[in-house]
Length: 82
Image (cartoon, rainbow, N blue to C red; front, side, top):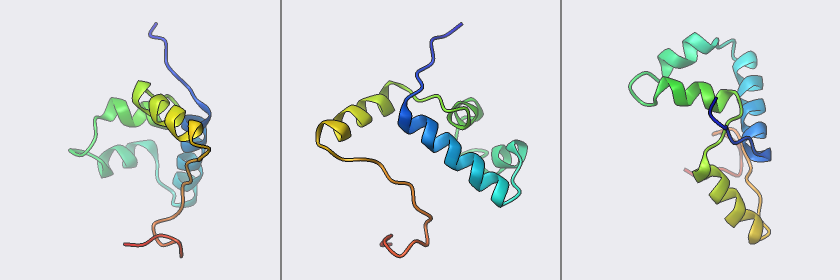
């Protein structure tokens, strides 16, 4: 079995995705169809399960070293600038 990396950020991302999917009544199959041709389906499933990769872990390390944190906000949030 492959050693999968699960970080605090990846767990939070997965939790937020799960909540939003429930709120919008989106099933895993529907999400796969929505992202068809844009993302690898295996990657989508891993993200939903909270697995990150070395790249996300590296971003987290850099962000953390600078005393910063990621934030996930809705696209229409007042602080999001197009």
